[in-house]
Amino acid sequence: MQQIMKQAQKMQQQVAKAQAELAEAELTGTAGGGLVTVTVTGLGEFKAVKIDPKAVDADDVETLEDLILAAIHNAAEEQRELQEAKMGPATGGLTLPGF
Image 1 (cartoon, one colour):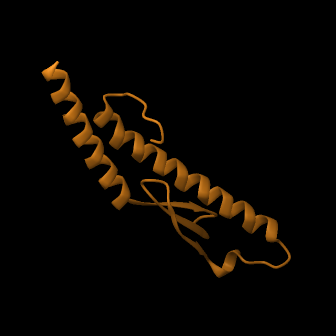
Image 2 (cartoon, helix red, strand yellow):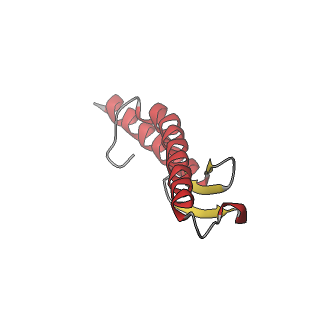
């Protein structure tokens, strides 16, 4: 039983370390060859959206909307991959709610 408690404490420490690393990490998603850039933390908090003025066309708002959405999806995928890489080893492959 004591061995299990030690393993649980070790896992808890690894999870805390992974969460801290994820909170500090910033990932970037892009679309349109860099016309739209979205920055997200490793925990999934969106921090910034940058739009190159060349992407702005009053007669074609739909394209800009599509580029923004694509950049968000790209950033979210980067975040998901980093989260899996950091949390997987810490949790021994277990899926924790919210991570």
